[in-house]
Image 1 (tube, one colour):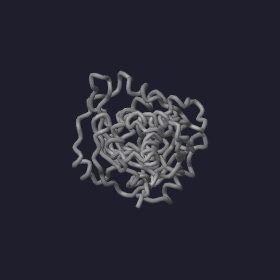
Image 2 (cartoon, rainbow, N blue to C red):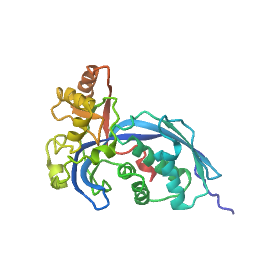
Image 3 (cartoon, rainbow, N blue to C red):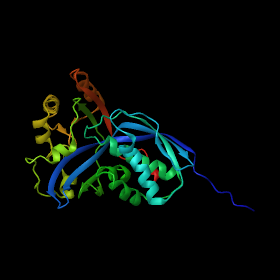
Image 4 (cartoon, rainbow, N blue to C red):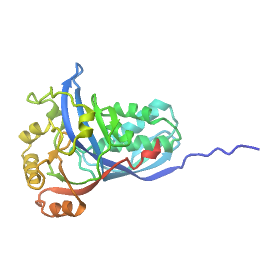
Length: 292
């Protein structure tokens, strides 16, 4: 009797790529190669891009969606697919569609999350069976934020962001404000005024903190708000409603936690019309956590 080989599906649609928030972000040093060492806590939220994948048998990777200002050859999604091909020698390729919702240059990890979803989805679509740790290793070659999305849960991060320890965070509602200003990450990290010697925090101290959303600070915030006035204005506006509002990543988005959806929605209704805003809920796990 001939054994039936189960092939992976030819298509995966509606694969979410969630945003993240940095509950705090401390720059603890700078390595000889120029990379900064960090400590942060990543909080996943239910604001997502959505990606669709169709397997190709000719090895070609094509982004079929036009994204203004992002050529396919530099897109982290395309680079992730090609990195996975190179790591495995697979003969497969893919057509990739992206429903791009998350703002670029917002500090919420949109591009990194798209890359991680690509690794997770194509690992399944191509039938590769790579363990999560290997996908994280590939992801790190694409960007420091990619591994946490592959990791698949909220995490305390160290190193350049790749040393991850899972953390439990309370269910939360957040208002995220995007002041429609693009903040280049490299410009913030290269600023000579950036604090690069914040003392190391201990994960147990964070875990024991009663209000985890007031712990520490974002060391990049002072630089970004000094350089980009709309980021400063948005942060000050949000602090009217929660004094612990802060910037995520290198900006431009700012966020604050609220006790329930109703309160968050009430704050969002007062948002100045020149900015974009979103009410989001926390996630305990990545929507594709079961993919690897």
